[in-house]
Image (cartoon, rainbow, N blue to C red; front, side, top):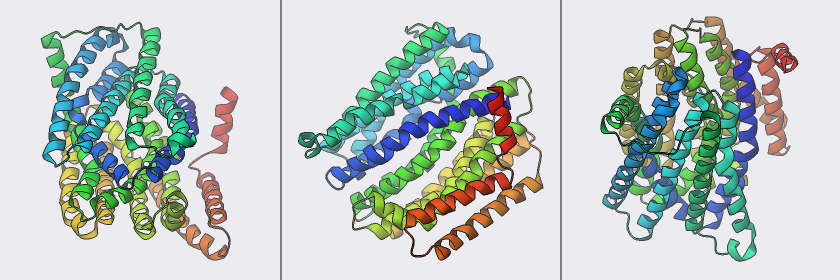
Length: 483
């Protein structure tokens, strides 16, 4: 099982690393630098509105579906029509609620039109996620990995042309960016369905049988509540910053620039969670020991996240100056440094919260998430009016760190993971050494270009992962020899 997991996660990471950073840094970033100042910040705030109301769009069906099909693959053909029908109904409810919230929040005219486009993006993205959840639940992780980059690949081609072709580059608008995403997600959904039909023989038909749809929605409700609460403590920051700050649109731009990098870093943890949910589900249903997979994931993610977080903190000014044309360099630097410090917490949450989800511990998850909502909103409404985007970043760091500790505690307790003190101290020791290395790197290589300092720091940190035996050369050789 370890070999199966490693081979699939390496493939998924590889295909995502080839595409998604190009999207983030060469397309999404250039869009923000090209469009009228403030318009991207408005887009980011509207995107947060659309994500918060995703409870009505998804209603936990994707997570429920992954867990159900991974436990009982034979149910796919009978469940797919009913779940698809439920999603179509929820899509209309989602559009109505989110659009109404946007109007009540003060958005008008062009902003409401943009909100409509963003809602369409989320609707199609949710449909793609639902189709992919079936593919992943059938343990077709490599196929799912290819589907996960299809939309981004298409967006790179379309937006890349519009940004590079001189006549369109001069007049590029945020509306074009939204339109390109709508088209790309539609094609990705269509491709996903064709692939799913070939591997499982499902049919595109609707089944609005009331009792069946009601049963699915009822059983999905705990997942929906969890997603809703997670959306609040992960996305409310952008809305509160844009709506309550004196220079809200500027602060939203600053937040979007820093969060883009945080979002790309989280790509790695999210890829693990995508595979782990059906994998944990299958292993727990067969009463297999999951502790070794948990340890393997933490060994792959946590040291890497320490390295990224420390590098982001020490080189935040250089990174943001390289990526963005702005006179708010100090604000960009501070917000990014605080946000990236929460990256290790995100990685831990992706492992341990996914384990609780696969175990069906939804009550525990929802209680923890509710605590996260209270912490996040309380701190946001206190700190953002005083410190603007920096206050939102600090709130995010406190929220994610608190939640990560809670998920670790309850996952270890409920699933009965063994307590390995030596392993815990090894992780802490690695973090302390990485912090010392960053300081030494900047001191000893003072006068060198910051990229030289960054790469030398990264190389030593990667080598230390082998020294600490988080990654074993022998296990890599064994994996390669087995093919």
